[in-house]
Image 1 (cartoon, helix red, strand yellow):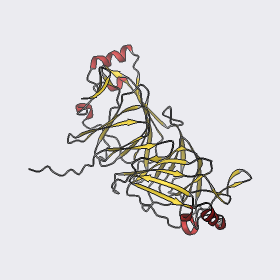
Image 2 (cartoon, helix red, strand yellow):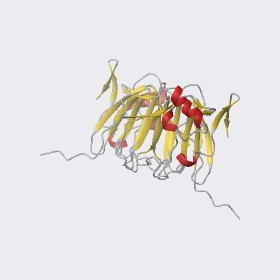
Image 3 (cartoon, helix red, strand yellow):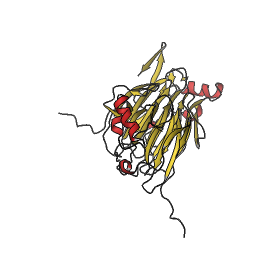
Length: 190
Length: 190
C-alpha cells in the first residue's frame, strides 16, 4: 500500500533580520543597480555619472522565498531600498502594477524614512509617508513605488496574493505623475 | 455633469507600535480574557481559579482596521498574546481555520517567544517556533493557534486574504492534537 499523495502543503518558517532588512535563506534575491534604472530618473546625466564613477551602486534588493503562485497562497518579501540620490531625486524602486490588477499589497515599514507613491492607470496619484511601524495599504488597482528619503536603508515587509504577478505597464514609459526631490535640504514632492 | 463614482479605494496607512504590539487607531480591538477560554485548557480548575482569584486576566488582543472582505483585498492585524499559564499549560489563542479553508496566513513575529501550532482536519499536526524576526507561513487548509512560552507578550503582524473569514470548526470540541506545557522548567510539546 502506498499513502495517498498529500495536496496540503506543509507549514514552514523563515528567519528575517528585521534591522538589516535581510531574509536569511531566501530562495530569490533580486538586486537592482543604478544601471538597471536607466529611463526612470529625470537627471539622466547624473545617473550615468553614478554608474560610471560611483561604481554602479545597488539601488534596491528584494528577498523572497516563493510559494505556489495560486489562489489562496500569499507571497511575502523583504524590500531593502538603499539611501542615495540621482541628481536631486531620491533613490526609488521601479514600481509596478500587479498582473491581476485588482489585488492589494500590504507594506509594513521596519526601518528608514521614505514614501510609498501610488498611481492608477486613470491618472490618480497618492503618496503615504513611510517610517518604522507604518503599515501602508496599497489597495487593488494602484501601481506602487517606494522612495527612500532618509540616510539609512528603507526596509519593508510586504505581502500580496501569490497569484498577483508583476506588471510594469506604463511605468517605464510614463513614470509616475509625481517625483520626490531634495531641494535646499528639504524633501519635496513635485 | 457628475463625476463617475470611483470604484477604486484610496490608499491609507496605519501606525503600529512594533515593540508593544499595539495598532494605534485600530477600528476593531478584540480582547479575550481567561473567562473566554473555558473548554480550551486541560486544567479546568486552574482556569476557574485564574478567573476568580486572578481577576480574569487578558489572554490575548487582536487589533485590526478592516478592509472590504472581498477578493483581492488583504486583511492584516496585530496579535498580542500575553504571557502566563493555566496550570502547567502556556497561554494560547483559541485557534481557527479560515471559512474559505484554502487560504493561507502569514505571521511575522515581532517580539516574544512561542510556537505556532497547526493542524489539518485530517489530523495532521505541526509546530513552528516563533521569535522576533521569524515569519511563519500557515499554508491553505491548516488551522492555527499561537502559544506564548516566554515571559513577555508574543507579538505578531498577520496578513490573510480579506475574504478568508474565521471558522472555529472542530477546535472548541477537539482542540489540537498537541499541547504545550512547562514541565520542570522546560517547555514541552505533548
